[in-house]
Image (tube, rainbow, N blue to C red; front, side, top):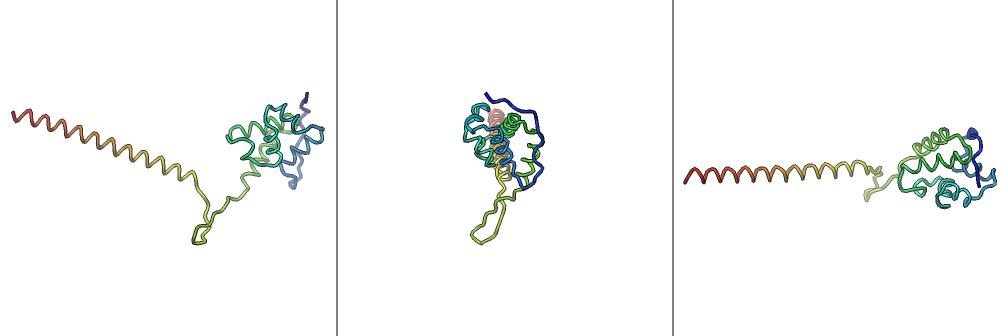
Length: 151
């Protein structure tokens, strides 16, 4: 059974990527990817994804990615907070993937705005339906009052 070591500070060398830090620490201890995966209770592919810095392949849910990184760091005896800071800084420094439209113009995709506008379309649509139903009810009541006063 694998056991974690006392926490050691991460390598200060900026040329060593965070995934490589995991791999070096694992290899230094003589542990295989399969052994680490069993100990962390994750798939070996997820361990390889961590070591290759493939955030999307680690886990589809971003909430679990941070936990996987912390657990792996703790198992290896790496400073969890330093590691988390390094990963976040590394991922935040990556430029957006740019797309080019049919006119050759470069733009950055903005999925958050698309989902926000979809939300507001639903709100406006629901509001319009509510107003239409309300108007129908008022007109129905007015017609019944008028027909009652005529007789």
